[in-house]
Length: 306
Ligand code: DON
Image 1: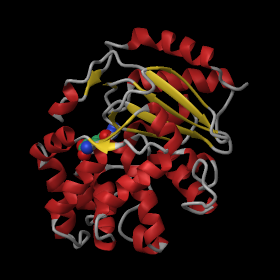
Image 2: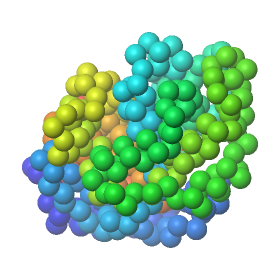
Image 3: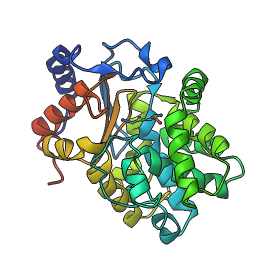
């Protein structure tokens, strides 16, 4: 069955009682002020049709969802080995900002979707682009079709003021020779990517290329190959929700990526891209009601990659 807006409204009504059971991220002070009762969902079909419900057009901080965009951009700039000798393809089984494995594994992060991995990818972008922040914004505006997407400077500054952990991760990797640039400029870019402000509709449109073999919405030319699109989806399915990836695969059964702003994107290859937003998080840092909404949707429309 194909989802309808009525179904999306029903699903939001069903998960709304979960609000109050999670916790809004407060380690980034600017995120702690977001009202916990926001709830939105948008579905973008590969033909461009959008259906949506709730706070689906309100912008929020996409946070780690940006890690998929950084990887995509890096894959357009580098040969596979240049990326994969510096970052792995395995689930970490640890929190997104954990440092435990890094020292034991010689400064090579487990995957590009934990903070350490995304910092390496940001380092790669820094080495090859003269203005990485500008290029990223250009890409996101292109993919979403929304020329008004911006970096939320308050969020980016707030992260910079509380950057000790990410800076430590980057310096540790640098001590192992797995970080080529000065840490602070790369961190500044990384925080900007995380501070991209987008709505569920923007996100569903943006990640449409992952449901459509690398071809962005309305474009004539793919940004990445079909193989690269499959590779990113595989990494999302195994690593996109950190140490909650197994639980997400079990409950939702779609490649997905979360952010501590409470957003999650999920991909039904060949068919549609879904974005949800509910700011309260579960203990793994993934949107609690957002995951429940995706679980209900997957079940009601009978979709799973498994
Ligand atoms: O670097 C950080 O900690 C945040 N800017 C991003 C973390 C995040 O979104 C993890 N997601 N669930």
